[in-house]
Length: 205
Length: 205
Image 1 (cartoon, chains in turn red, green):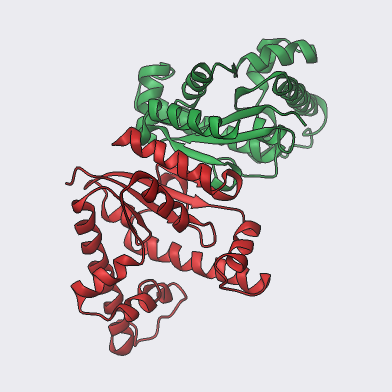
Image 2 (tube, rainbow over the protein chains, first blue to last red):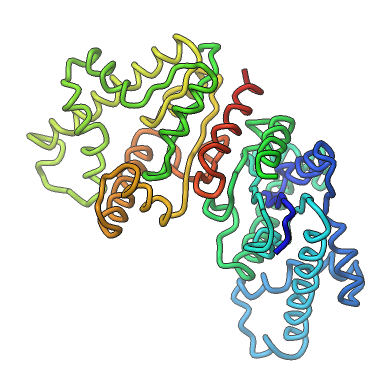
């Protein structure tokens, strides 16, 4: 059990949840972790950080696509499955470690679940309507050049996130019961989300 | 279109959402409406306020229970169905009227939907885990004297609210997409919810 207050942020792809988390951390003067966890987990696990980046949420999710080959659980599939479990374990260990260092904001990676009953957590879900997310994916993230591709990217990424979360936790990704607070970043705006979260953090600290 | 900022609160039964709404209104020094809407709608519609209180969410909901008697839509059922639509219309008119008077907090009655595109709304959903709600229903509301009854009351009331909301709006009750902000009153606590909402309101005003 650590005494630090930790804001964990789960977010729909394209909602700007990462940016909100970063700005909250900056406003509060506390640490921020998102992709940084990959580097730290790489050091712990011995995996290359590129390998973690590519595979942290991809493999287990395949089992949800009805891949029931007899090879599953053995051979190459078994190795991939084991790799993902080992990546998850390394990331979870990393998350526990950084939460014990001081108050912080952690984005993704089931941090809410990893730190349950361990820290004073404020578990947040950031969401937005699909149109706003598609716009952000094209204009801000620049990860798609047309609406069709951006829409597919948003849906596919969220599907992977939901499956990954369901696999490793006993809760549902994106449903209110899994969080303390859910904020619509499109209708509230980034700045208001940041201010509301900073206020909530101060009240918990 | 009114220029007033209105906080609309939808809430799971037993979550303490009404109390949170009242305290936010008091803290901000703005008007608060919950059951007051019944009295005002009674004046508008000519129905007795007791009749509205009893029937405002009950009748349409029956259609969701598979009541497909040939009497449905005619005779006594038809009258009841028409009564509920007239109650809804009177409440909606009341809500538009009070929102035009000044900034306020409105609890329930699809106010978020009634005021969509009409006011500067902050639409909020207050929820809590079932155990906390059961406890509150027994100890605070005193509407049940054992856990089984409180649980049934929570589930039945929320089922009616969800059906009522689905019937009159094009959105789902209790799902994040329908709100700007969702707060877990059990894990955040009443006071923190009030402070966070007051902060969000000030940022919108």
